[in-house]
Image 1 (cartoon, rainbow, N blue to C red):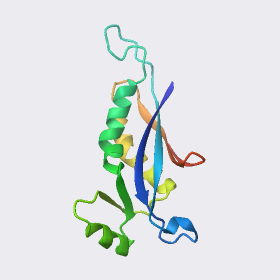
Image 2: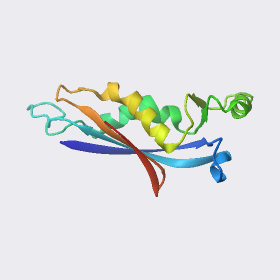
Image 3: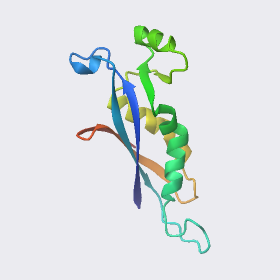
Image 4: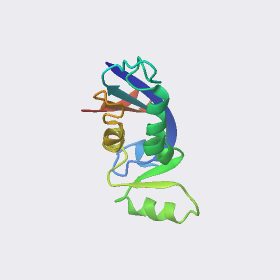
Length: 146
């Protein structure tokens, strides 16, 4: 069985080598969809009886490990030295320095890498992360899949 939970967050970024508008500092209302697979839990008296995983727990884990860290932050590539220097000059600015250019593809892959071990077999029902879909806009997204 597969289940999917969607979360949203706001963040800024730029694509330093882009030939068009995305080379400028800008932001997005990102949406993150997490698809998990596992057996349906069938244990009388268990709060997760009938579920693969409680959706509120899917959300809590994603918020703790990705969403709360990236929400209202500027996601910047460590190799984008001028922007890293600029953001570090702003007192208290929420900046996340990444080892990759913050494209939708790289962010989806990073979120998958972060979340995969955290969800793995949480309930003893062969739970595993199957897909992270990151929407950069309503019409553009990237999928990181197992």
